[in-house]
Image (cartoon, rainbow, N blue to C red; front, side):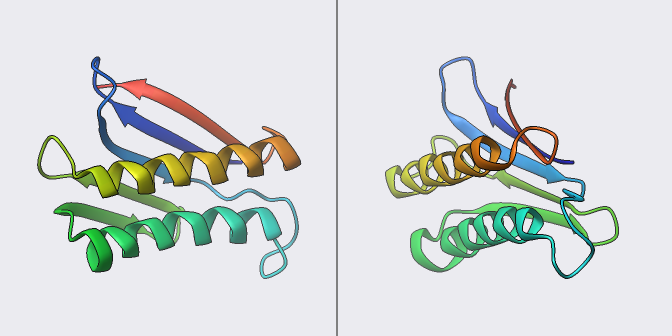
Length: 110
């Protein structure tokens, strides 16, 4: 299962997210759930870097399927909030369509 934890403050401000694990919906190279989640996450990170220029810290481990993205400054830009809202929307759709057995989205207060 791929687990995505969205980190927010008590005031509801985004602090970052962690995505980890492999969906195991299908064999390696044919796993559409893993591909969908990866595309959403990587595109969001690339958009922070190239479009909003949001200062972020990214750590990844391809073997475990872990990607951690933390915002270096608070509050984040309005355009970055929109990107995070879009990421959450996309991940919710994947979770809804394929089930929490393969993709689970949670929110954690930090």
